[in-house]
Length: 271
Image (cartoon, rainbow, N blue to C red; front, side, top):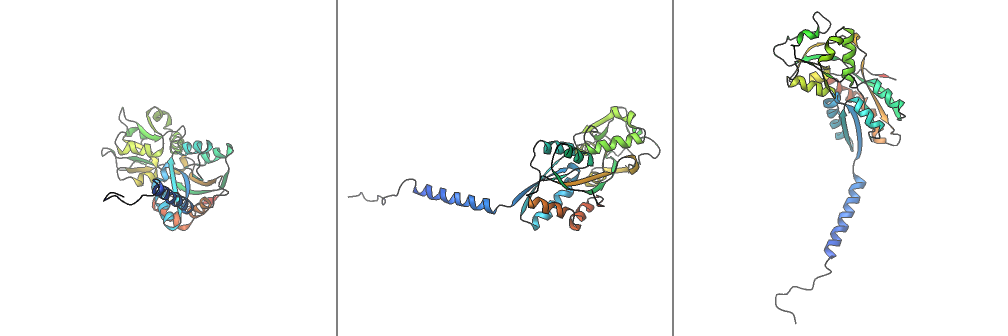
């Protein structure tokens, strides 16, 4: 005889847990089977704003998740050489793409996607509105005694490498070399000028246009440095259909229109 108020006989103590566990496993399997494909893209820091918009546009039209990794092209190239899973590489110069190929990396379907210009920038109200490098006074005249010139590190950052070429062509490198504030990528060089930590800097034209806190004093003559070219390539992606499709779309009129909106020259030549 049972006591009044006693509940009915219960089932095995773990029955409910076992059912919940089974449902969880089934949902996990289903989610894994239906999850969107992920494509990792290693891209030069100067592409951040334009590529973010391009990615959002592409993801809205395709069942794919694109994960961009932004850094200096030199940093990205070394990461890829050391086994980074990036399926696409967009470099800010051809040398680091060339270097990858010398490391035995399987670089496929390479082409030159974009071009850029080198700009002298400032956010200081005390400097002139315009100052075109190579026309008249030297860049050093814009700097006070303790001021420095913000640049990407010329030892490995493409923007800094182009800057060194330009300053050498203008016969200003030796004077400015001891006064360089070296950034790990071009966006770091931009940030120093935005914060007024340096009065003047050298970045890509597109970086300057992306910032509301700096102004372009002038563009470096294109003949003072090698063409600023952004090569695009698949990285060991023979079986990665999603990466192949994304690479093809990046050369489309729709994608190039996005890059052009951010100031990139979209004239493209196949290698």
